[in-house]
Length: 383
Image (cartoon, rainbow, N blue to C red; front, side):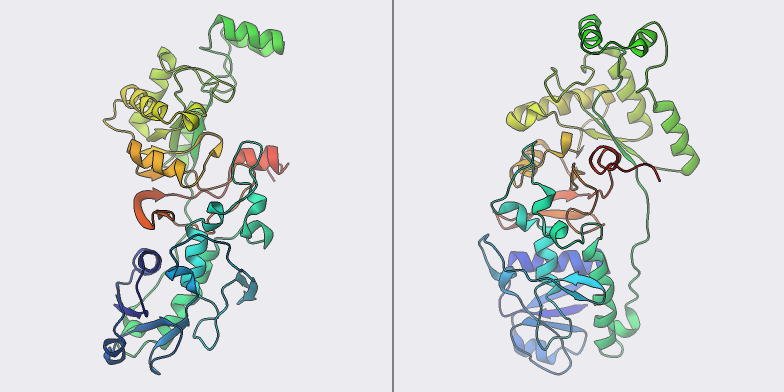
């Protein structure tokens, strides 16, 4: 157990300590504001304040961020430490920067609450982010910091405490494919009017061939299933089941038998989740209807996994809507315009509602790569 001293406690401090120590390092911790009890503690201890207390502590000079109860522009000057970008520099400390405040700033997506420019879809533009501006978007920076932090904390801990009992193992890489089923089939099951309109707009011999009994180009489900078996993968499928089509919602309508069969088949094999329609952003009541549709189609009692269509994500409103609808695990923490680590982390974490100053029950699962970003936005080929 690590004892952490702070002159005052706060919801922000408790949140980031829970993430760092219990979730990432696998160590229990306790917060105290009692300096005498801290002095007398013989085990591993961290002094997170503006002045040192005794020689046996691990000292981190605190930045005020975790003790504020407002959202405001933060002065951030990045520098390089141990080969990685960092910020919130400390003085006379056992760590070169305030890892608690810096991790909280990135994990809470603090910058997305500040005034910012939207992209063409009304989303937080990645070019606004500190990670993009300082060129660390392609790194899970928090995980990198924690590797160094764990080593230094262990080295300074008293003999018999963390030095001998703590054996932190950095996370190993694992690959989980996830699929957004925006349009289940390119031509099939769309009906006569949609296919006729599509043909007039863009005449295609392929469309005629498919409607004549050929294989639909979007029908890759059997091929994917074989890959999952071959490489022992556990994918997640997110289905768009908007009840009516729109400019950005062009799915096969959920009442179609083909969609029922497709959803039911995948729900029997894999985890599935809701891909909320674009329309539901303006009308949240549609989300619950879509979740009910998907639950009925899949035979599941409740849908609790989601990823936003077009990664249309606005904090805090989107996540609050999802929590209200019963979503427990969310997979939209990435950009729909560039690949990289939006929250600078490669680990799941609970969402912190910065306006309400509370840790919520919503578990965020960040993604770092989307094929559409690589191909359409970044103009990359497979190699």
